[in-house]
Length: 105
Image (cartoon, rainbow, N blue to C red; front, side):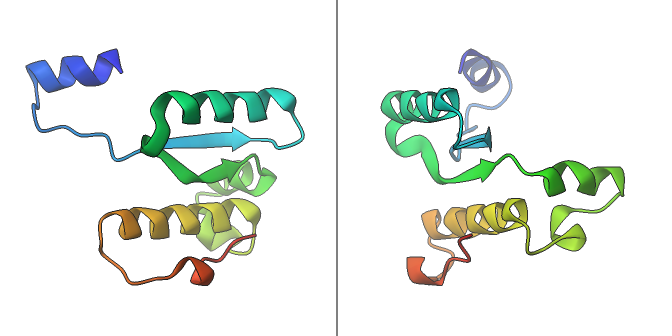
């Protein structure tokens, strides 16, 4: 947050945070769940509902020079990123997609 404030004061006063994205989440780990809860408690509505889960396919795709959607569009990681894109569009009133249409996995 300090870095954001420095950039705002020195370089771009209009810089705004779109949201906070939780990544590398592993629901089997108590620590992951604790971190998500703490971030949500501290940042509230700034935290995206979408969480990017730890996923092998996300790690493999860059080594093959492909985005995860081209490498394995059905993987959990790809679905997470599709949900994030839809959430960003919805937050900015750029789509009329209903929550029921989200490709959750």
